[in-house]
Image 1: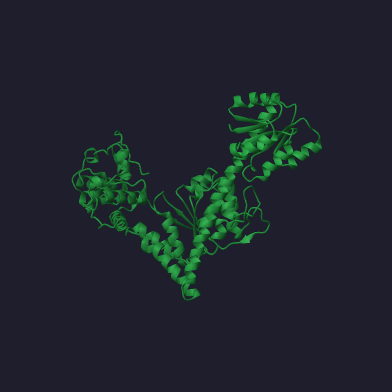
Image 2: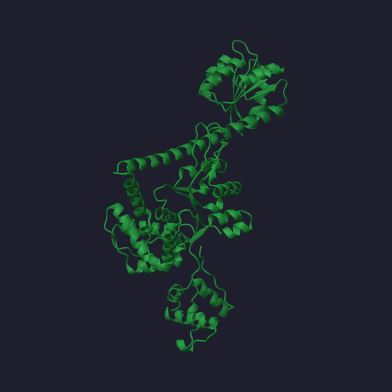
Length: 508
């Protein structure tokens, strides 16, 4: 691991040997002939590591090290003593002066290189840990400020009950089921699930669905529609938590429990006490942390790092994932017992392509929201734009539709939006055109409904043929007409024409 090294030695021969050893390995090496010069050089050079002789005139290495460690600017630089004094008392004095290591002359080159590399790596890891802890500290401070602002808002109202109810009502209006846009049966099913959970605030919930389907909005609606709406809603993205800091971030730590832990910190569980902890992308949680999360869910207690006494927490966990947890369980990546603890109630959020009747309503909603933000009049969607939106598959789901609407509003400059204003991802990565199924499956004479065969497969084939005939082979329109997924049409086509190759469209 290349870095800057300062050599401090009053013997030129020793300097030469160390220079010849370190420079070919890529280290940037500087030299100081004694401790006095070193004290002047180090604050300006700020090396990553110092190799320091003990016996030197004017100022010996022990005193030089003490002064370096007393200076906040240079205190964290690791100092490795190199000395011919090999008695235990001298070695002890070196460590008492603040040295990180003690190398005895004559030394082996391999030993010096190994110790230099080890201490440079340790110093780098320590800096990374401190940076992560500073990030955690800033995140916790932000959460605490938000909670503080919330409390200040409560104190400004007339009574304790009125304060809490007023704030909860405000949040519920912002994040409640009224914010869901659409009328499809699948959306109605989700809203019914949220209503059922209103009286079961202790039940943990698992939300499944593809990325961009609105799982966090469902989680917030569950929280703000329940008896926990007065408590905090703490969202946590499991993917964004560094594995080495995950336990500290979730359960907290005490001052001095590890390097860089300069103050006590509450974890997300304690911050969510009385409310809801939303664990997004739970399928990516590391296996060791899964066991500790299970213990907290079973006992209702957290033990911060460095603590000996557990702390009681009253938290509902709402987890979300876009992964197939059953497959993760079979492959050993996710604990079966944790799954059952999290999935006391499950809500499946469908992809947007399965709730196409909601697309016009959502597009109009997003256009109104963005138009209000930009201070312009909401534009209308022209028929060709609406038809394009209804024929698109939305691999990015609602999040993608939102981005499409925002860009279309910007490009239209307030004028009516047509198909040219819509930027869809399949235009960036085009797929093969769908085959003309109407030609491949010749439509027979129309069959009266009363005369449909009682065999389901044959009846389905006839209905698909009729739909394709009515839509001139347009697969998307035929699928919507039948109320099925277009891939079902492709599969039926392959069954009836096995010699023909069909490229199914991706549903990702």
